Amino acid sequence: ALAASTVGRWDVADDHFTRAMEANERAGNRIWIVHGKHEYAKLLAGRGDPSDNRRLGELLRECHAAATDMGMTRVVEQTNLLAQSAGVTLE
Image (cartoon, rainbow, N blue to C red; front, side):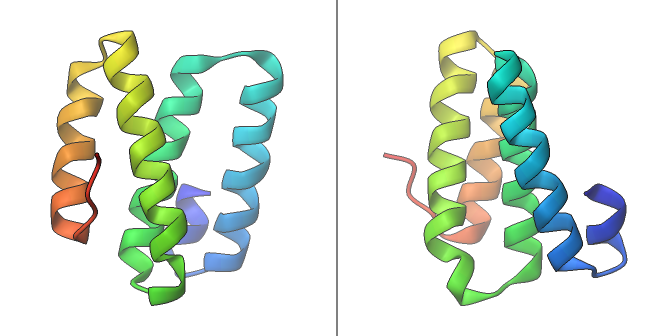
């Protein structure tokens, strides 16, 4: 997903992120779910497509809540910064 987004293959990256997050959900891997949501949010913010705004907000709020719950302070900070730059309210 990261490689595809780097070269602007948004559709491929989107598909990879979706499948990776589904696999992590099935496995119950909460830490990787949080990281995946953050990276997916970065992709959507970088793409800059207004049709992604609702999903971007959802991902950032979910990521922020889970990272806060698990004490992932670095991810909380990064999510706050990304939300601020994307104009997303986390509350």
